[in-house]
Length: 197
Length: 197
Image (cartoon, rainbow over all chains, first blue to last red; front, side, top):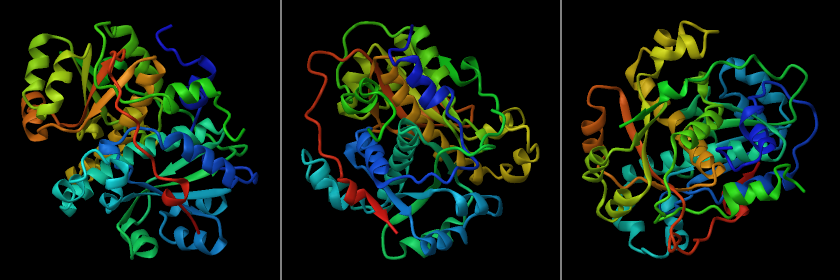
């Protein structure tokens, strides 16, 4: 047994978890989303910069504002999922650094005063956190339907014109519907993805 | 109970897991790394593009080639960790797409013939997979010490001059040493990271 994590949890999070393309009507509660966030917020980021922001679209009006920017095949599933979230990188994450990483107060200006350094670090670290968030959705017994097929410029203008947030991914969340899953595609073998020097 | 994942697994992967800054001498075996990879390879990526590549540095010579490119404070811990891995994005991931996503054979050239589209998608999706990989290290009962403080251009030239791989993160892996952990820094409250529309 090379893994300590019990096999049921391995299945729940990775082996049996699948990207869902349709969902039942069962709602995703605020309590579930809070539990997901309060679990995955502990995943590590560089200097604890924690740039991930989550925008939950609960009103029909907000949902339609999003659907307009999704790629064609993503529109119907985004319209009908019980809950849809925009995962974004806050490129002004440095404003919170004095609180998040108090050990080095000068980080905020000396390292991350530069917008391009923030954009690069914020995008990378929020993507890491998006990985944790998908794992967290599964930890709540829910299926995730992550999508990157959208007009990012249009979405950012629609939702984040007055902030430093930049959309990375849109995720549908819910209980999988009857025909939610496509056949699983192959993964790269260990030998093809891992090199030992 | 808003989460289905059992509390022991929650602790192992997120709540009690911490970034380690020192490690014991206990080796990390090939079997452990293979078990980690074979778990987290199932995490989703766009079009199953699976761009993450892992370079394990096991020989002292390879380790020293890496240490030379690490930022000062990261050098001693990288030199002494039982195992160090470079996590990189394969920006030529499209070569494997016909096998990884056979449903749409034209993806390889029509969408990802463009190097800048590959660079952007590969970097983002490999970062997601880096998040899964950190979770996987913890699933093996090991501590991760992820680092982004290195000279990426120098590292890429040293290790990836003849390939499309681009380093994203270096991770030390092992059992935590006696003074491995710094005090945990605060995380953003749910209300500060999550917005409902």
